[in-house]
Image (cartoon, rainbow, N blue to C red; front, top):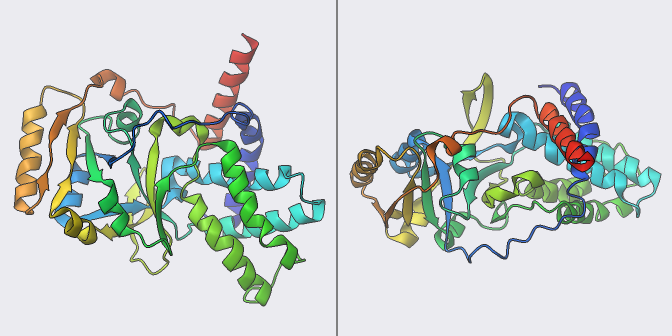
Length: 332
């Protein structure tokens, strides 16, 4: 997809986004009810479990492609809207900042941002629906050991930000560090100003992008590993007719800390009638790879509920539907 096509998608999404976000503008998200997490859980299918165990690695996906680019459109709209709505910026500052951001989002697509997604809850309806609606697994990873996979320089770990206000504050904090030093909206590639924007805006926003997500997905309680390094080996796979880039993150540092216990727990998702068969298959897989698991659990989520997926359609259409649902509920 070329920059002009991406720009058109973003511009078309900005209108519905503005209306959609109104329901979250003054909503704070409180995660204090969640227990202190000792593990986080990766929801996946059978192929995912076999890949993790056989290759002793995790797949880190590029969020530009998640959910038919819904995630890319969300954070693009979020960044641009935050700039446009900032009362502290003059009109010329808004024009400058938006020009830089558009250049970053559109000309660098797909960006060198790769994420591995986890959930802080081991058996949750949203996890099964989104990532493993049929014959899925929730793999419990040791949280402290996972942090061995990041270095806080070009890889990071943490909870996803769902709070609209928090997202806006973090975006504007990055923009404010550049505005006083670069007077032009357009800067020459490779110039000193361009390098300053790269260092103070593009790299921090690249990190932040990995942790920005639509507020309506807050029930996923997502925890992520985010990797920025452009030097990671890239692979591609085709899904739904789209070629998606990804990279592999070795679990060797993790396994050194856990003494080859790869999963603290495994929750076997709906349906329930083949629980033992599926457990035995994974146990054989673990033994073949000299790995262990701490415990086995059966999901309490009903099978039919786990298969009830979110409404389809384009990201823009989904934003429009959400806006309509919200305005209808307000009328009632």
